Image 1 (tube, rainbow, N blue to C red):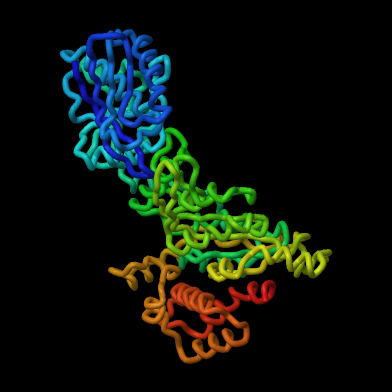
Image 2 (image 1 turned 90 degrees about the horizontal axis):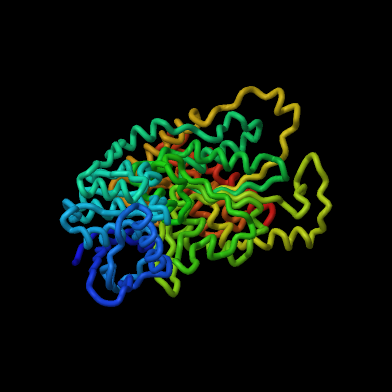
Amino acid sequence: MLAKTYACGLNGVNGFLVEVEAFISGGMVNFEVVGLPSAAVKESRDRVRAAIAVSGYEFPFGRVTVNLAPADIRKEGTAFDLAIAVSLLAAKYPERFISLSDTMLLGELSLQGKLMPIRGALGMAITARENGVKNLILPAQNARECECVDGICIFPAQTLTEVYNHLTGKEKLSEHPHRAYEQILSEHTVAHDLKYVKGQAIARKALEVTAAGGHNLLMVGIPGSGKTMLARCLPGILPPLTYEEALETTLIHSTAGELAFEQGLMTERPFRSPHHNVSTPAMIGGGNRARPGEVSLANNGVLFLDELPEFQRMTLEALRQPLEDGFVTVTRMNGQNCYQSNCMLVAGMNPCPCGNLGSTKKKCTCSPNEIKRYLGRISGPLLDRIDIQVEMDAVSIEEIETSAEQEDSLTVRARVLEARRIQQERYRDLPYYCNAQLDQKGLERFCQMTAEAKQLLHQAADRFHISMRAYSRIRKVARTIADLAGHEMIELADVSQAIQFRNVDGRYWR
């Protein structure tokens, strides 16, 4: 007998429909899975056989062949177990099943017949909808991940028996309720609030400008000056994720296995902080399956590199293209995948090996050569791609205890949202959504300066030997400062503050 069910495979973050065909014939007892399966898919034979037997059903006797079509695309992962098991039961008991033509089956089976969660469920649910599949049966732990997908009925299940009873009409599964993204977003709270950051007025302003324009940020300061604390507050003042951004971000995290089970659609912008011993493939993406790296997991969010000079030089240089292009292409022997990497780079570092250079409270013990070697680990081209640079010193105990209550993240976010609204109106129907994305054509059109502001910027470029890339980035930052101040044209004060946000480059590296 022949039976067919539907499952889904993953190619990067995108899914593709897989037809699971089971054929039972006479002859020597054998069980084969064909259609270019990976080792994990081949091992499903033993899991499926045990799950069917433990669930109280009879495994088909004879020669059993399961085909995963299209047969020219490699099938990875364990999400095919449930579809294979149901196709075998449907081939053995065709009269019991009502209809399988409008249902996709996803899930890994344990030897006890329980459904185990899978990775990439969101991408598979979207693929099911795009291919006209009306019903989706998947592990209960993955249901919340897919609850925002319109046009498809989601049925979470715990065991193979529940799926069998549902498909044969004995006992229907309960449909998981659909939830609007606005409802999920309303439940989001800020994890790290700026009101707990005492002092550091300049750094706080730099963080606000960074969020308002989507710029990259470098913080140089002694240990304990609050660099990490400020960086963790950045997602809380960024605009909320749109529905499209939330889908895109959740897709990447789900594919990489980074999404917690029973977690719904991501509503907070991701904050990734890899350790400085991270390898280049882990940062950019790679491995046998060409999986996304840290720069892609930070898509639509923040990539924070603490102790920047301690990272491998090759790893830092590999970041230049993904940060510039907004995507990264990972090519391996088993495939090629393109992942979004449209993130904000925030970096923190000490000014010298001992960390006390420039401090008003501690004395530096490093020699000039040691400082030069330490700072030399950061290349000029990478520095040019960082729009805002700010220097930080330690905050005294007296200032922490006596300072007034600081602005909270929601207050700062309101100004950031207003600046982003101005940019959205300005760049309507154009390929930009924030000031940091402006190219040379956009700079000439939207970054008009007053005569005094232009003269000041030219003087600064001549005096500090600013490169053309850094010159353009100063104009972008000045445009953001002007948006926050409500200026239609970039004024003298806007350019002056933007130049101040580049003084770290001139002080340490020139």
